[in-house]
Length: 357
Ligand SMILES: [Cu+2]
Image (cartoon, rainbow, N blue to C red; front, side, top):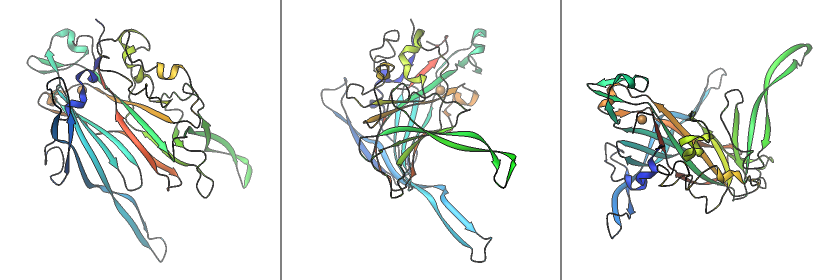
């Protein structure tokens, strides 16, 4: 059987059973219930503390400057105080801490942390290329966590454009001495007109901003009032595209995909994704294969992120990766820009090594 581990199989929305004050969230947090209905009961059930909401400062300045080179020096600064909405999904042995963080400069950040327990099996010589011997007789295998986020952005209405600002090298001359060469950078703007033109694979050689805006709504200087999508948790999926079990996670091929919003393209995967690998019920690549125009349309941004995990010794008791900052939406240009931002986590996947069941 070809199989890839997809957390959506566990119906992860049921996994935020309870958050613990003082452990999962600050004591002062407000706890928010959720109502769930599943196959285990005839009536909906209530989780009293499925979410928590709290305010705190991050311990570093959101902005600051101390001017001391001039006679009338000054200081201006403020700490980065943020409002955080948190939930924690438990999927078997793993716990995924999901934060939506609202900064005072208008940036909306999504952050994922993974913790819980590793899944182990008996160490044998053949396991060496997949894992370390962690205890007697335990090993745990290399795997790849990947997440897919659906970001339904509406910037100043639903008529939006996706553009990149590409930072490029430029040869020029020293302006006061035209015989001397000088190297610098510039940026060029690239409007993405169709879904396939918008598919993005990260390339270290071509740095760029990804911006979203309503072209009809400019600020008083005629500049775009855009939000920027800033991805900082990207991870390369190494499975060959379109072959074997990769089809179930076609969403992992690109770090950004942009599609015209459709009710019937609600999720990029399904509860069955782990079991219908070779012919998935939801194949994300069909969302963009019709290559619709995305200029001045209601757009959805699909972002894939992740991390490779090679379990090590102290993780046999409990584990905690460093926080993975997955997405940061930052207002660009005119800072008056406001966004209505609906964020929905989609199915995550764990790709085990071949020896893993
Ligand atoms: Cu892991």
